[in-house]
Each structure stands twice: as structure tokens, then as C-alpha cells.
Picture: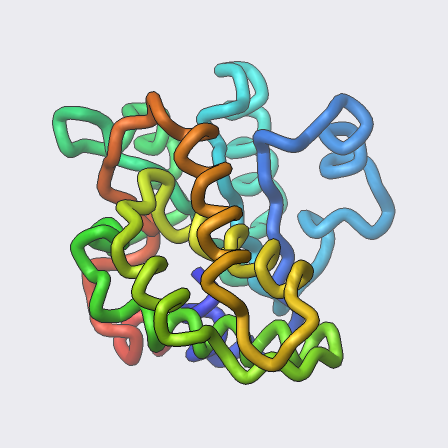
Length: 212
């Protein structure tokens, strides 16, 4: 989602992430009634995550409001979702058809381990800019450890782990010891989570075609 945002015509405008799994009653009410709710904005990128955390009524309400208020016409919308065991998106996402979504299927990170050094470097550079940090990267053995891990929760987990490691480090390079410690916590936390592929609900096209 962040790469699509960075390559889009709206990359100079805000990216607003709405994680439905984290919405409490107050946050849910603000989304629909708040004066500065992202649903009221225009010319921004709205990234919705974990929409299946909503119940049927909430999911339908969100879809209806986006349709009735022209949210998609005023902004760029990105919906991320994991596919089910049959390789298909949950049937709820059919309700988004009226927004004329297309689908980009991203292979799971565990099948793209050769990309991990590049992705890690890209994200560390982003953290350096946003947090005025000066992290040069990973120690070689720490980077190798990242490549060996299976990443059962895919890209979101990868980004969260990098954020945690960046906060822990006090040197120019993220160490093997810190990386081992964080990944050990991840193994315990997600020991029972099956690996699954990950879909970004926005288009079976190249980035250039999507951003036209």
C-alpha cells in the first residue's frame, strides 16, 4: 500500500490509514461524525486494513457511506485483505464492487525473501526521515536472520518488526542480538498462525497503469 501511495499522483498529499481492528466505539463514531474525519477529506489516500474485524452491520454502513458521499471519487482508496483457504477474498468484499475496485495479488513475503534487503533498506530510510534517526541499516548476520524468518503475517508484521528494531537500536547498524530477540517474540506470538497469501484490493495491473 505504501509503495502504491508513493508512486501515485497523490503522493504529496496525506496517507491516512484506518485499521478497523483498532477502532473502538469512539473511533468508529469519529469516523462518521468527526469534523476532520478522513471520510470528509478530499485528494488524499485512504488505506483501510482489517475490514473483516467489523461486524456485518458496520461493514455495510462503511460501504454505504463511502458510496453515498462519493469518497472514492474525491480520494484514492486502498483496501488490504488476506485471502481465505480457497484462495478467494471473503464474500464481504464483493460489496466494494460499486467502487470499481481492481485487485493486485501480492505473493507472501516468505516467497520473496530476496526482496527483504531492499525492503528493509527502503523502510529504514523512511524511518530515518520521519524520526530524524541515523540508522545505516542491518548488520549482515541480522539481515540474514530476517531472510530466514517465514513472516506468517506478511508485510504488516515485517514493518512492525522493523519499527520495533529501529526503536531499540542505539548504534548505526541494527544488531543480530536485537533481531534475534524480536523475532523470538514473533515466533511465540504467531506460533499458531497459518501462512497465507496477501491481497491488495486495487488492481491486476502495473503500478504505472494503476496510477494513471
